Length: 138
Image 1 (cartoon, rainbow, N blue to C red):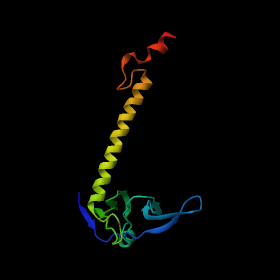
Image 2: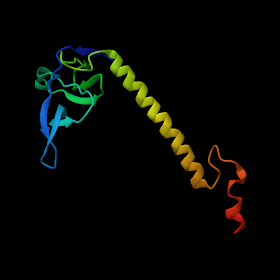
Image 3: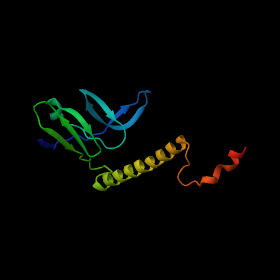
Image 4: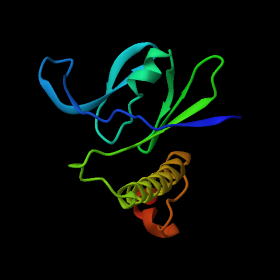
């Protein structure tokens, strides 16, 4: 598959309103399915104005890149290019966030395991077998 790097990515932040009517702070707008939407929180990547003029659609946006595709064109990857005043200019931020997400996922998996055990009626990990003898006697 051909991959083309989109060097002109827009990273301007814009003010946007929430559905309740109040201002939601600064967010990065993204174009999805031909209409403009906003991504709240995190780092989002914008397609360049030129790419939008050519009719590209956003396929997938991550915190580091956006992947876009249009009929008859190769897959385009636009990398995040932070503005000078950004607090997340280094790659360390993205690496740290990736590790944090992985840790959160692993901790949730452990929680789900314990919940499955409890629902199935078996003892949860870390509990000893004789812990509920009083409740069984009554």
